[in-house]
Image (cartoon, rainbow, N blue to C red; front, side, top):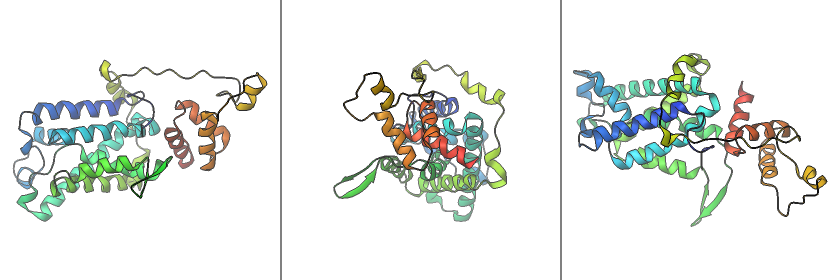
Length: 289
């Protein structure tokens, strides 16, 4: 699964989070100082250092966790494109704060030194993102491997499981806290899903200059048919006879089979460079408003 358009087009907040995670992980993890970054009972209920709390939210504890975590953060940028950077920034703040609070409560309840410190990194955001991934991202491909029934979403789940169990209970607690935070956001506690940051705040992320992470995006040419793409019938009237099934028509048929009308499907596909997953997200969001 690609997660939509390549790069961080229309996803500046996701780009900032991925860059921050990479920089913090390199600065603290590769120097061998990551063992004390995560939350623990002593540094939470003793002398809490703000810099350590901030670092624990971004720096992954090891290189494999950084690889899997950054890949998942990159994929989940699709949600920022779906709801917009303003609302996605609220989702990040909410899921992170709730996840940290749940981790602190867990440490207070367990008081087990074997869990100290918990694994550091943006676990709250990553696993909170699995909630909209589960409910809103449709399955587009199914296949079997060694008798197992899998789908195109299975690889994202497997990456999450690898990250969740990477450090035993030290990583399970932050992961479960993130999942609960995602559920609370979906339940729209205190109307949180209607909140969004002002443009002046989210525009700061757009000004971050990272040329190696920015991909240019060109919209496909628009035709006169439905204002978006040419149909097979239009091509035939122009003397063009496709030898195989039009992939655009196949994408439209997929969305129509999911219950969306053809006109809305065409518009959503045109806006997303004909990415079926992202187009379905836009249509689902439109229905929920």
